[in-house]
Every structure is written in C-alpha cells, then in structure tokens.
Length: 501
Image (cartoon, rainbow, N blue to C red; front, side, top):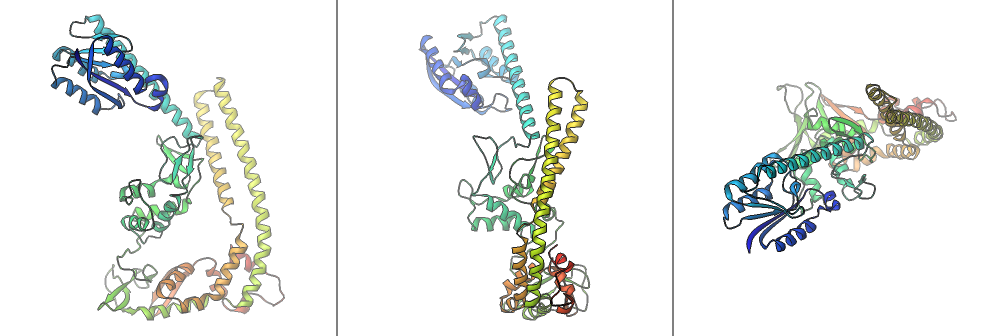
C-alpha cells in the first residue's frame, strides 16, 4: 500500500458544530484511504486558524512530506480545511510540482497531482478564493456582532481577572473568589505606598494564586490596574462603552491608581516600615518627613532635603513625634454631651435624606426609560429604512451620551450612604474616644488613626498643622462646647448638617 499523511483541522468550536469536527474529518479520511489503498502513517488533528501568518502544524506536515520522499500522498477533508490563503496554496503546489506529491480531498473524492491539467489548477484556485471570501465574510460578521454587543454594554471578549464568562447568559459575572483580591490591589495601590512588585508579593501572601499556583506577575498585575472595566466601562475597537456588568471599584479609586502608576503621586516607598512615613511634609520646602534608623536602635524623622538642605528642622525622635501628634488628636476629640446632641441631629437628617434620595432615583429612572424608548424607536426607523445613515449615527450618539450621563447620575445617587446615621454615630463615638485610643495605641496603630483623621500634616518648627478630613475638619473648626450650640435645650441646627455633609 502507498504511504499517506492525513491532515484534519478546525479553527473554532462553531465549526465543530457545523460538521467539521476533527473526528468526523478523520473518519472520512480513513474511509477514503481504505477505498484507495492508502496507508496513513502519520496524522495531524489540529485546531488552528488558516489565517495565521505561521501555521505551526501545517508547516510541520509540509516539512515531513518533503523529508520523506517515499510518502507520496496527503489527505485533506476539503479545500478550506487545507488552506484559506494564497501563500499556503503556493506551498501545496510546490509539493505537487517539485516533490511529486498527490493531494487528496476525502469529502469531495478529488485529487491533484503533477499530471493534473490547467482546469484542475484553475478549479483549486477558485475553491481557495471562495474559501477566502467566506472567511472574510465570517470575520466581518463576527466583528459586527461583537461591536453591536459592545454598544449594548456587553463585554464581547474573554472575561478579565475578577470576572468570568457566564456560559448561559454569555455575560460577565463577578468571580467571588478573586474579586476581593482585585479590590485589595486597587485599594493598596491607591494609597501610593506600594510598588507593583510589593503589591504582587502582598497578594501572594494573602492567598492569590495563578492557575498554576504561582504569584501574579508584575505585567499581569499592571494590566489589571490599568483596565477601566473594573469601574464599569470598557474599550472596544477604539471606543469607550458603558458596561452592563457589576463594577468592582469606583472611578475615584481607579483615577487615584492611575496617578500612582503614571508617577503623579510621589508617596515615599521604603523597604523598611517606618510608622509615620507619608504623613508629614516639611513646612519650609514641602518635602516629605521620613524615618531613618540610627545605630540599629533609634528611629528619627527628618526632611528628605530633596530641594536642598536648610536650617530650622532637625532630627526628631519617634517617641517625641508621637507625642507631638497628641495635640491635633485632642483638638477633634468630642465630649459625651456634644456627641449625644449631634446624634439627634443625625437622626433628623437621616429621615429627610432617604426620602430625597428615593425621589431623585425615581426621576432618573423615568428619564432613563424615556431615553431607552427613544433609542428603540430610532433603531426601528433605521430597520424600516426611514432614516438617513448619518442622521441615525448622530442621534444614536446623542441618546447614548444622555443614557450614559443618566446612569452615572443614578450610580452617584445610589452611592449616597443610606446608613449614614449609623455610620455617623460610629464616627461620633470614635471621636469621643479618639484621644484615649491614640494614647494607648502602639506606633503602627497611632499612624492608622492619624491617617484616618487627616490627609496630611505640615511640620513648622515644633508644631504640627493637620489637614483634617471630613467630618474632623468641622470638629476642629468648632472647637469647644460653647461654640457647638447656644443652649442645652436648643434643636440641632445647620451645624449638624455641616458635620455629616
């Protein structure tokens, strides 16, 4: 029997469902070989696109055929399983003309060899051209389908880390196992105190593993941190689309991370953990005040002198610096009677806020439905041929822009904390115990308290000037008890609203 090679190929799962499965092609090839007294000595069953610049399995088969002169026959299923491009067609003709190979097509029961006439070569050219045209049409329709899917807010590709492709709905669903790691990564990077390498190590220590059980590499982590899909939007074909999937982080957090990655945030990152690093700036030159270890025993803080050395601020021992922070903490520690009075104000404000939030949401829902209806009517007019293409495109962009804005407003309103009464009470209770908590805490916990109440501290001479966060800025401004309210029996007024705004 004559020796032969068998090459069967699919390029997608869809092709297997259309009758091009590898097993089906192989079965036809075996039957063809038996009928024609061919002995298949080597076979290739591959999933490989016929449009790749370098088809590894195809080229391997060609090389094998050239090296084994005794193998004179190669069996394919049909022409488009062999090739869909002119370059590979030329390679096949080279085998036929210069290596005396015979090409067989098991499904159509045809063959081509060096004795084939010009009509056979012409028909093969036509079949390859048709296969090429069909492939182009499939590619174009696929791109159109993915573009349409993207415009409707559905991510048309493989799910990024933290999500998975739902096989039933074909939508992005939240991967509950890995979502906490994504949120943790953005939270840590937004602080400006970590490099991507440090972040990868922290996430690995906290349990994050790749499918192979390794740590996430820096490149992968970098792409995660740069991907806007995590705050609800994605880019497809050069355009930004509002996604229908659940966002894992806020846009504010994403923007902070981009500032850090782009080098706009200049927090000091140190291998040694000094508790009060990234808290204080120098009042003379606005540089960071950082820790330094002396004699492997003592920790001192001083200006980095990044803009040149200057006089006026020396080295401050860590215990002395911790004591200097007590005054800013004491300034925002509230007495018990003020806390009780402010809680009453929070209760009243809570009722009115929940009502106004629901009213605003209902109005935005109505507006969203109105715009969605307009979009639907617009598509109907396009399908009926009653609208110019350019007019349709302009109105479509207008309505989608309005829809994007309304949905953003909805998310903003939803973000208003309906539990702010409970959260506000917790903050007030914390403010009541703030000074005692700070005094008892170790240096690391002291730093956490300091970061919680203020975004920065400026050191002038021996005095610290904090930039308090809300609502601690209001507490610091109001000062003592008499400035909070005029009389013990007075109703809570605008001061309470300022506190929680």
